[in-house]
Image (cartoon, rainbow, N blue to C red; front, side, top):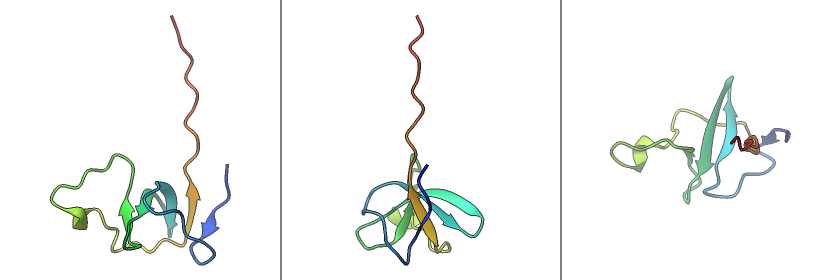
Length: 75
C-alpha cells in the first residue's frame, strides 16, 4: 500500500477519489475544481454541492485508494 502524502508536499489530482486523514478519522474524498475537499465514493448530496464539502475537516495527509480485491468467478 502507498504511504500517506502530506498536503503540504503535494495535493492529489482534482476530482479523483483518495483517502484523507484528519486527526484520527479517515474518509474517502476528492478535491473539487475550487480546491475544496468534498466527500467521495458513493456519497450522494441531498440538496446541493454544499452538503458534500468537508468544511470542518482540514486533511493533513492523503493517499491513493487501494486496488479492490480480485474476485474469483465461481460456477
